[in-house]
Length: 110
Image (cartoon, rainbow, N blue to C red; front, top):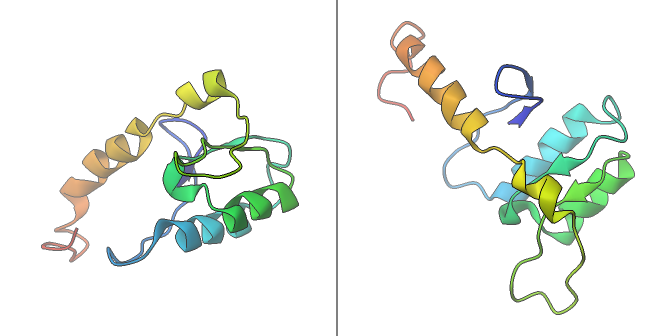
């Protein structure tokens, strides 16, 4: 999910629980494309792979993501901006969406 804040979702798609984060993140980056060119993308370490960061840069975004601890050649990133990344957006969205699952025939699905 790509969100602008806790009320605005820019792009969202659902994937199976067995899917890796990197390829799913790249789908989101492609869908957003250059619509918000120049806006940094705040990502957690699950999206720190070379392909994902390269794609974000290709679309004109600055990937703000810390390198994994075992990276041989780690990079610098804006630590203060990264602290503003709010994973609560997703949880808030899910809490709001959950009551509608039965109406949409999604009961029993996570």
